[in-house]
Image 1 (cartoon, rainbow, N blue to C red):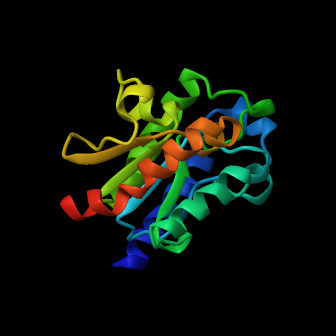
Image 2 (spheres, rainbow, N blue to C red):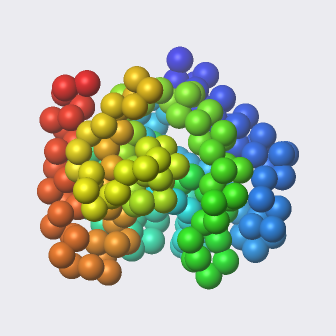
Length: 188
């Protein structure tokens, strides 16, 4: 089964390239950053868009945010190969600007397909952009760390690791919220 999911993900990756999604964005990026990890993962983490390191390496969350994410995963006994990680927008926006609403809309069907292939028990949104796309109308400051069931899928909105790196106060909040993941998974 694993290989089927992996094959489907690779086909989806090719489909994004062939569909020429957000050509202006693609033109300023080094490469498409599709996502990586275990196609049979129980947890999928979704960020907003690749940054500079991600764009260069072609992998999500490999810069400072990624290091922090890895540390938090270790705290709950997980490693990168246990989870799947991706972004809504698969190309780095120029100068790390926020992804535009139309860019998020253009990539959303591909993200949905990615999730349909993996079928995780839990989707963890990292930051307000990924939360807004998947759980519209919520305020991250109010709902972070609270599991939400929406269309038969459990979501856990968390602050983005980058925000926690810039704002020391958020760091402990994110660590505490992250620590609830194993208990949430048990309940599902």
